[in-house]
Image (cartoon, rainbow, N blue to C red; front, side):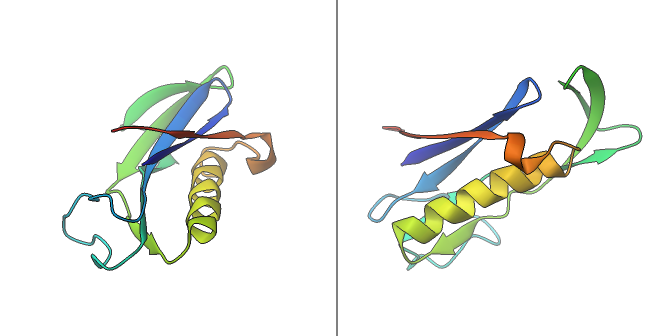
Length: 110
């Protein structure tokens, strides 16, 4: 499995990319078992009040979390690009320029 991590504004977000032959979690909404690569990561957005408070770029941001939206991909290249785009999008949803997100991919033994 691969961990895809984005860092920006003093915080980070990490998701998991399950590769061909690895057992991805199964739950309602998970991609078909036949997907060669499965991406799982939190989704969140900024709210005016409530949620979880996170310090981002020196300001307090209230985050509301959605259920993870697993996605299946046919190729490793598609999966990595989809994972990186997902992470950039989450930062954009809390006011951080996606171009300011530093991304890294690391192999994990789970």
